[in-house]
Image 1 (tube, rainbow, N blue to C red):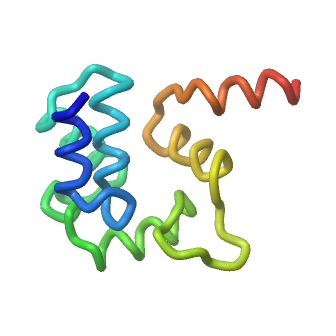
Image 2 (image 1 turned 120 degrees about the horizontal axis):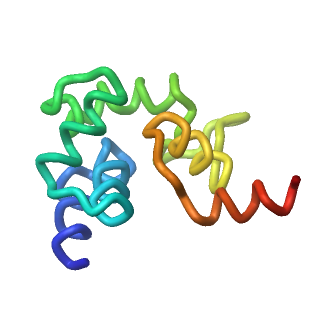
Length: 103
């Protein structure tokens, strides 16, 4: 767990793609390089762009998967998590629980 937190903070967390890579590492049991490649492929960017604040800020706004600063009308919380699950094609338990309650 410590390694995943270290990797996520090293990639800038939600400022870039650190949270997405860490989620894949923890949830899908991927190694760091495998997780970076998976996320880069799903986002259609180069792995080096995952740590680029400018590229990822624009992409996160475009995909509406959460940004560090609040934007009017932008996804937050579980709504952003739901969009992350869709974009990365992964399961997020809290999103699934909410979807089951709604159905």
